[in-house]
Length: 210
DNA sequence: GAGAAGATCTCCT
DNA sequence: GGAGATCTTCTCA
Image (cartoon, rainbow, N blue to C red; front, side, top):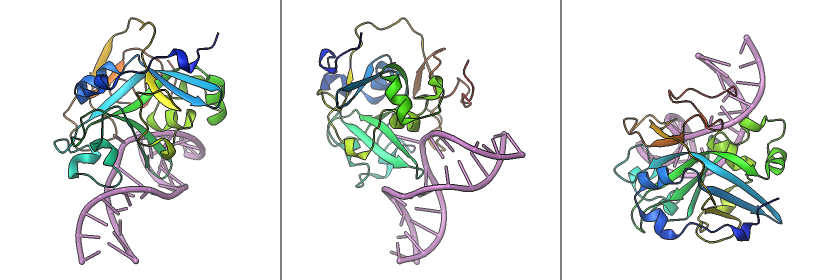
């Protein structure tokens, strides 16, 4: 029994205006919904990182607004998608009111629906490795810059919805991954023991399923 | 305009 | 565990 996109209620904009770190934590267990034609791909968010504004040296917004990071300075509840390392897109959710930078990087999701289509976008990849990284999940869901700045509070090709029931889970926090500045902040949140998170508690790559 | 860096991933050893 | 791929973005001259 597949879930229809219209049956999923998007999170309201007020959800995203509660502080970047709070949003990063509360986004866990929410449903990331990607609609491609008649197909509905759904993943449970299991890992996220908070990035601040001009007070966070690890953030793209640290040096102020540029053409690339402009969405971070926009209204909360929008997508900020950027291309990195010549190969990968990363999906962020903006979190602060207009004029104040802040975003949450979605690092990993657990496929709930449409994993067959995800496998088509990422062929020859084991189920556990489909979406366990920022670049992997965007590829599995066919997310690119055409969806940049899209409103995630409205039903459309990409939005985030509330789960009908959130499974009991323990949320852990750690240092952010892949950065060299601002590493003292424990702004990475993930669901303990979930098999789809990108790295374990010590920050090591999860190259093998557990 | 040139050069360097980068919120990553995959392959190879 | 290490290194290459790949190319956008930013900084500096």
